[in-house]
Length: 637
Image 1 (cartoon, rainbow, N blue to C red):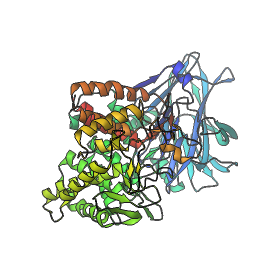
Image 2 (image 1 turned 90 degrees about the vertical axis):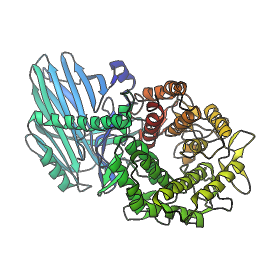
Image 3 (image 1 turned 30 degrees about the vertical axis):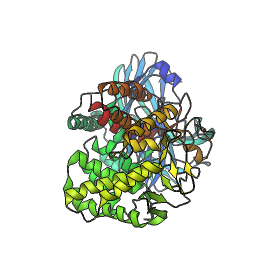
Image 4 (image 1 turned 180 degrees about the vertical axis):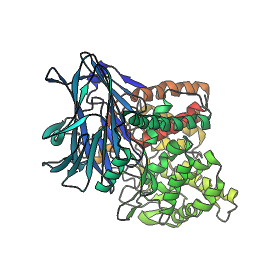
């Protein structure tokens, strides 16, 4: 349980935020004070036709005492399975808990009110009807249909319905527009008018009072169907949503402990709960959202994250669905990075297909399910090697030295900005290529398909790699090599080389690489994308300038590969475990109360104090740290 005192709530009222998701692409995300400070924040954001719409912006509470309006103040905040905010005013205590029912575009706010006097509470919803990443510059029109305990609000600008109801509180119409200032929006402050259709009012008695608010927002037909299925005037009915969500998450946590045969741990439950938030169902397909609140999908990131999201947590059927999805949508040996609504496939990536083969191998390590691989994935795995060897789209082709070359003026690796095009032979791509060949050799022997000599090619790759990628002056790896020159940039891609299953680098060189990465790239929150000694080092994101993403900014997910490499090179000794616990995992635990509560951010500034930037909750950060923590620390301790 993550608990914030009154003082902490005051200090972090605008910076600390929590997030819930519903596995449909929707989410609830706001600050611990429940006041939105960024444009994407709100209590109910629904995904409709691959776009996210902000419908319920926030809910405010007012008390009427002796005919005077007063606003209760936040006393504490805690996050366990769901967020709970404790509000107080004199002898009145309000405990406000929020949950998103799984697979419903709905949010439920439950109030327990302890009062030493009779008074009234007004619960005021503020609604919107725009895409979550855009600001509405003009007033949106709404129609509302009010009843005793419910109200239907229909935006004019989008065919949808926002339906809000209460089990006990009476609804009173009182239309108005109020301004919200998004003071923490990146690079500038903006204001927006949001619609307050009215309020729910309830007469508080002395003692314990319970009230529930439910809000559903979706396309009009779906909104009515969902609300009618979920709404009730029975207060005890709403407790079931909180119980069900807690049981669902606890079941996943329990399954993780049992499968991995590890003891109870403080950090792991938060990592597992957060990892669950990225799995989503889209038109019947199980997918992985790369981050929230942005919620975009990326094939490379999904395949890297698969181990931490699905395998460590023993969700093997989910892993099968995701692997099958990317296998089925492969074209010319290339896994899709993104499949657009119109069916257009974007596959401009040199490494995503290699991460696919890596993920299949990890799946086998956890399940020993050779039949699934043989029957559903093997042919596409063979296609990857075939097309890469003979050449495929985007200039991807194996060179005479066996190394994989990318002849393209666009970025084709995870460092996808114009400042890091990395044309030529990229270091982690070739380590992945070697691993793919070794994995294919491994499976070909088990399946009995030995027509292609994967091992022979792998040995050629290994020889060329050690000969050409080693920077003997800096005692580390070149980031990219070409026929004309080698890129001496000290980047974290070389730690990925050390963290892959099949070791390509000579052992003594691995130690030098780890030393270089530790000295120039390691921070308390992840690895810098460029050495702080490099003259191009910036360490922060400049406004709308994507090239600064990889010039020193820290990416959290790389910490997972660092932990794996460190433990491997130190032979999984107890001393190494203690060092990782103290130097890495202890800091990860502390980060759970910073910025995204109970989750880990996508990026951080490359200089002290390493402020979080980018998406508040990152699939890659959570998944890779979860994988490394379980595989390399907890299992070995």
